Length: 179
Image (cartoon, rainbow, N blue to C red; front, side):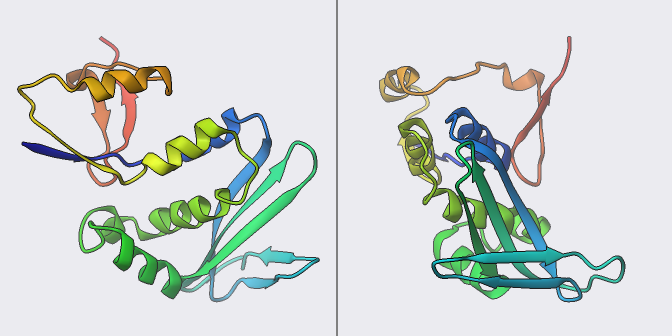
């Protein structure tokens, strides 16, 4: 038996959000200790971030923002400690892999994923996010018809794995090799 974990990459999350037709802009950023940063929650939420011009220091916060085509907007902020706590609790690969080699990008993906749960997005996005980090066990010698059944729900791009360049740190497909 083989076990696979479906994981949406940063670019996949963005693609699903933009495909909804509701999102005008979505971004995620890192805040460093020497940046000017302030946010308030409530009925009139405020988020202000002015990056330092040099010597920014250590990462202390991560945030994601969205702006809708109708003018609505939202944001989510997480401290570095909150991200680490979340990753320890929910990520099986926290002690190795991209959490150790590319923490900031994984943190931005985490805060973006939390943010987009509150965005008014279509069901395709919700189904895609729900699939993130699901584990599927299968026998590679037997056909798995459940994967075939999902082809109607998601757009799949079939590629030959030998002709694809994969980032060894993140596991994301970077580009196809032209033959």
